[in-house]
Image (cartoon, rainbow over the protein chains, first blue to last red):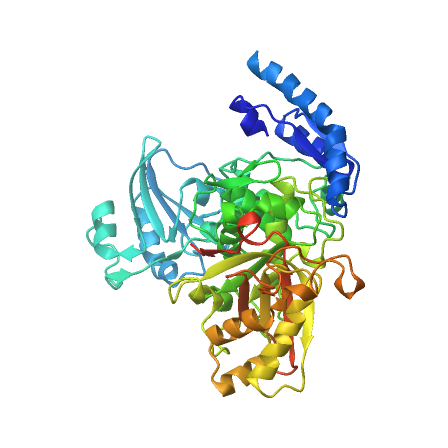
Length: 75
Length: 478
């Protein structure tokens, strides 16, 4: 993500809540502050319909993060 | 201890050197002819007939960079202007200007290695003189700190005690390679820490390696850092996998690796410490720790250490390294993202067809009997099973082909919901045969003790191949 952002490409990470700590540890180690949206865990056993509903629910938040990152990148 | 003379002769000798003993009358002659300072490295009484100083700490010898004894050198106005070593009558006469020096001695006698450069001594001298050249941060422990506990406390351990990586031990470890300690061999995930040869040596010390294992550890680290292995993913996955190291070639014998009984188990220093050193590099250089970026739900005991040597000598097949293009006579490591061991117990099959079918049936269960494709597979064939194929004249290639074919299942049997199990595959067209293993995803090695019809499956990561991790083979350097 840091690599993409360094090229001016807005990025938002999406993961389940189980990975909040991993994201924090990795971001701290690499000195980055990535934009992330976390969805409820688990997703592996979700049906397609459930996954679509989840994506719809979180789409706005993802877009908002993307726009926000984009604004920073453009500065 | 007498200071080195500003002007005069200096000789460095040791009792444990026949050439030094041979030159004792010459040193006596030199002493009577002019200013001579003799330093003796081992026996304070030697040489009896010549006044001398005992260089017990070897600091003088080290300062003079003595490599061979006897060494005779000339100093003038505080600087060395000439040097010779061993016994070379003509050279000693030329240097000293004494035309009859050593009349009774043979013309030539080679010297002996100086004590100050012996392994185990030179490292301490370099440390004491601040000449280690090591770049890593030095950490001083408090006098009341227990060094083993201190390393646990600082988070450098994999859960077992580690050997304190003192400067002397790290230098000794580095003597196992000709590579520059400062050479960067890659960035180790997840923190992308620069990994130098020195950093690998430090972790090899901590793991309990001998210096001669270091080239194997270096090759293993370099292999997991190659892009196709995807070390970051292997570490961060919630699945069980960690790097499994397979060693081929003459190095196995040179460093005493075990490929016979208990080939995958405990009790053999080279096997166990090489795999551990690799994991410690991931932890201490890369910052890969469980419950942080390492998200393994269960992990597996092989994440402490998992290093196998193939029993090439006992095998009727070409080695894994040879299959993967490593020239004969070269040693190599192959790294595989794998976990655990699933047994194949077959004590009845006496034909290769029956045994190959057993192998395939067991492989079908890798990860889940309905997961197609499953994952890459490292198949460890025990000697008693290999004998069945050897007797029947089955090549390794034949066994590969048979296992790929026999481990397929009709797609309709492995769809979600069949057998009353929701798990299953949605891939592949209805009515076709689903492959359990991707093309190139099976590796076969032979290892183990002579008795016991028990082969083993080391299963890989679901993300095998281009979408995740592929095995990587690397020739072991010096």
